[in-house]
Image (cartoon, rainbow, N blue to C red; front, side, top):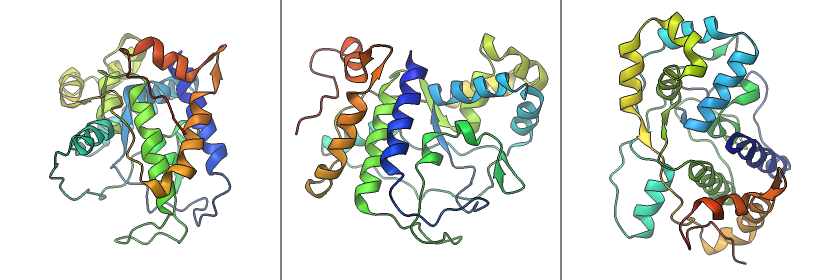
Length: 249
């Protein structure tokens, strides 16, 4: 059910963002670094794609050859919780070095199931190494809010750098074949230990300027039905009273 909801969230966001003009084109790989953050569900989605396409040997090679990943310092919901509580978090500069191990011949080998942080990355000017992408502030606010919902799908689950999470998932029964090919149980164990923990949604970080654009997107997501029930109803069933991400106009 959670994977189906993740797919629905991604679908709604993709339709919403499709009208924004971007400079991103096939073969443009400046943003394809090793600094990709995923949730446990997104990692499961990638592993499911790997199994369906009999790519276990390929994944094991990529994971074995990947450079030791640098973990994110916090999750998006943990950061939002601190901001909403008025606490300051001293964040180090993000390291965008290192090429994604899933990039081959300037193309993503898991493009169909790429994480939301990859899918939502965009720029209205061609990206140049060492320079920032350029998107409207409302778009950044929207991607942050949707990332919060994705993390809220399974609070308490592991999350973190994509390589770390995929290695940790290799230790689960469904992905036993990848673990056998890796033949490095200690690496898998340390990856699981190094993951962060997903946090529940504490509220959205939206400015007054962004609300008119972003709130309709969030409302569209939460009212989307998956297997006969809205996503908001799913959150309400799983949250303590008052913790559902209800959107108020």
